[in-house]
Length: 124
Image 1 (cartoon, rainbow, N blue to C red):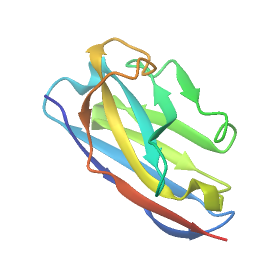
Image 2 (image 1 turned 90 degrees about the vertical axis):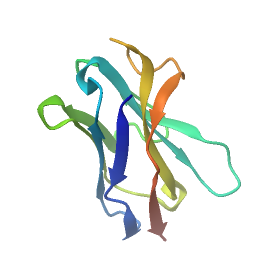
Image 3 (image 1 turned 120 degrees about the vertical axis):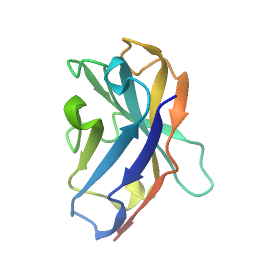
Image 4 (image 1 turned 135 degrees about the vertical axis):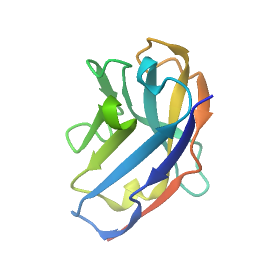
């Protein structure tokens, strides 16, 4: 079982940037696709971005496309989410999760491991 820990959240002004990290331990992280999801107060959790197990395929929610970039460093067992041009509506708790099956794209919606989440607050 892979354990995940997110970091990098915080308070930033609109238009600013943050980089979130998702550090993995245990298991064979490099075989798993990873997704970032977020949940704002009073709203359902939503997909933000995903990266395939190889790093060769990435997918984004239309709301963040062109502003956010997901990447991974399998040697460091870490996935990143670079967030630029942040907006107030990006305020949420951000979670990373590994897809349950190996060699996937991260789009199945079936996740085996979750981090505890990191708060991102964008002030307008």
